[in-house]
Length: 233
Image (cartoon, rainbow, N blue to C red):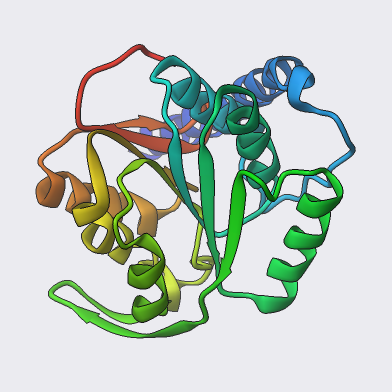
């Protein structure tokens, strides 16, 4: 039994190492794909969406000619998505709870002449109660007022923060709140799918939305759910 246990640990360790190497290879290749949209230097922090995940999102927008994108939690993805939408036509709406960070985004977007296609909305976190969730999420009044009359093609859920056990499920409300604004042919993307909280959220979303999510642990670190089948991107 001890030998079998040690063998399992050994296999798990090397499988994780192989996956890590493969993930890095996907990200290196993705950086090459992102080159045409990389006009200025942008700091890529450890908390930012992985390059391979970002490429998958940009492909989705491009292949399906999506024109209205909502991003929960702004960051480096905001710049790449807005650059693509500026080229092909469309607009990006970003909800950000951190006012200081939101102002930094606005300043940099302005300097790159991107505010004509992207709006950064400051929406502080406030208490929300749903059937399967009680906790903080973006101010509902602000979100609903801004989305009124909007038909959303793609939602990127990379916020609110969910890096501790206490707030692990903080991104759950996104699909429930935004469903009424989704177009018939929509895509919803959840970042950080390697975490238990996000994996739980995806299972709940699948039941709520009646769709299946593609889990990309290695290639992108994201989960992609589509209302209609499409290209594998």
